[in-house]
Length: 549
Image (tube, rainbow, N blue to C red; front, side):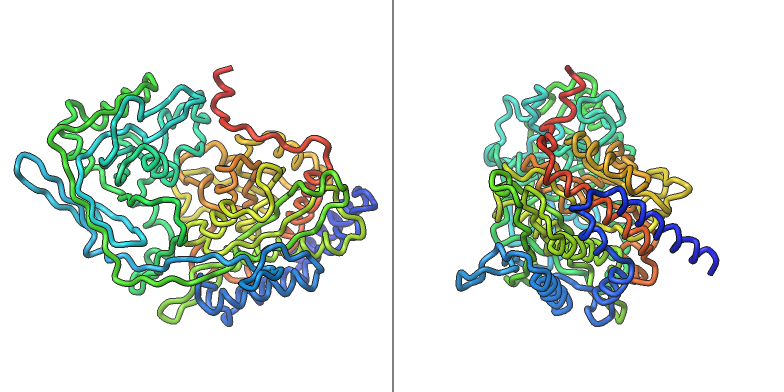
């Protein structure tokens, strides 16, 4: 009781300090950020009644309607359109929901008149349509084309009509001086970008193999570390994809053993190939003699349905700058229920959803409006692959080339603690009670500076560890990433993993409401700066290139 009283008293003093130091024109909105409101709203979104908010299920639809209702009550401008062409807070996101048949998924190698076949767990994959591919295999290094670095795994390589085998992640991953953002990740490290790049070069499928020398979990190991993957094993969560999915070719994750056998005719070994690339960053790609595969992906069910992004606008006050945009975002879905257990998703991501709604109320209630417009967006189907965010980035309601900054909330309600996600991979500080992780500074140091300046009024500990690690793939794992691909300065605001991450035990009673309120005050002040400052944050299109200057 004594500690609780001290925490409340401390939070109140911090709030009063932040309010006193804030320009008077911004103070009414800042005063709208109240712990009691956060507690009530998260209590609703994470309640049993919403059944874990699984995408395309009734509980998530309730969350969508609640967010839209709150935007309407706050007086935000609807910027989407409904089926009749009328203004709406709901942007329809058409999805394909499908259940991959793991037993039918297979990869077969044809060589020297013989065939070797692999199934799960040696190979895994999913695609919205049933797909059969038969084609020769080409080794394409890390599958990266980065002309600004003079690096291209596809230079001089003909992959049209062929399957490409690529290593996961990036070259020189453990080298702090690497042009690929040192020990951090760049946009090129994610499988999404690798498959898109292979597709653009004419490949018909992609096989993603673990690098022979890696200090991070393989794609197969990552899945085992996430709670819902094992606890939902009896009734797996269906996969989802956008109806207008930009990825038109399938991919498979393969084991190191499968990779070794496929590369057996390369005249080298997987380890030697990786070492050669990492040593000189030159092209070591090659066609693999007498190596052809057949790939089979099958779904046991498939349906099309619609979910929604919820979007609303506070229009800017400056006629010249109002067409420019600052985005404040989160995602509303979670992992549903299974076998009588509900994945409540209080931190992931009722906290972020309530954060967006709270700031929407704050900016709408503030008599003075910032110069640029602020778009509030709560995305659909993040847990199924950032689908709502990819959809809005592909179908923007405001031009992305004049979108100046994005604040994305995903898990902003807890203290970071060691967990199955982080064990043996990243060091968690001993005290995270006042700590906020900001992810994205490699692509916009200016953004980081603006937030750090605003934080002088709030007093959080700002942590950039996740910009310098490659083990957890954190940079790719939330809704800011599709916007980074469009050169928008976009950060993930994140209080870190904890043992309840993706477990039914992620409940509303465990949220640190005073800490969350501090984070939202910092976001409010930062958004004001992004919306008002004469020179908005600059986007660094390739952070590694700075190391060569």
